[in-house]
Length: 240
Image 1: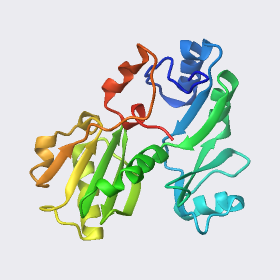
Image 2 (image 1 turned 90 degrees about the horizontal axis):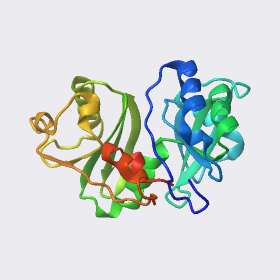
Image 3 (image 1 turned 90 degrees about the vertical axis):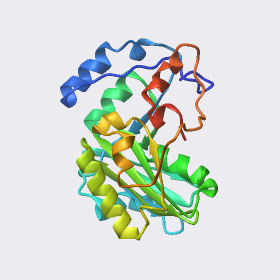
Image 4 (image 1 turned 60 degrees about the horizontal axis):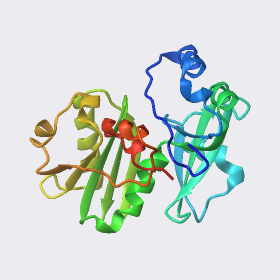
């Protein structure tokens, strides 16, 4: 991003393990640009949602331990961000050696858990929702599932998913947990179902009211950089 927070370039890279990530960072031309800064979104299982009324910044590690087993604070960077006018805080964590790979090459102006993108987008738009709405936010190897009833957040969680069978399993569990109707509930898809080897037509066998969402955007791109939006990933449309 430049000094106006406009995206100046965009690339997608596949890698395996920390050595693969290190090679990408060493070779990627983005990390050779000058006069820019980075914003790091971490998509992993280390996150927890905390109501703003009880949030204490000195207890971030404690909040994470309620939701997941994390590394010690000596081994990881723990961070937090708020959404919905500080009504919800999202606590996240990232191994320090991975964080340092980015920090050494591109100063990180802000670090957030990747869930803040989807949660922020949904909460900004919640008053447009009908009585029962479920959202499937798709990414590589995982999905975020969220549910709203009468404009209020009921569920938001992340699941490792790489098949249609896995996606349906978690959707059925969600619907049963919150007693939503598969006939009435509006199911919203954000992202590319190919990432989980699924198709909208297949999901329509189980859910009557299902749509693919073209999300609004609050990210500015310089000419040429916007091509990454073709991935349909919510991260390319929305930021906090």
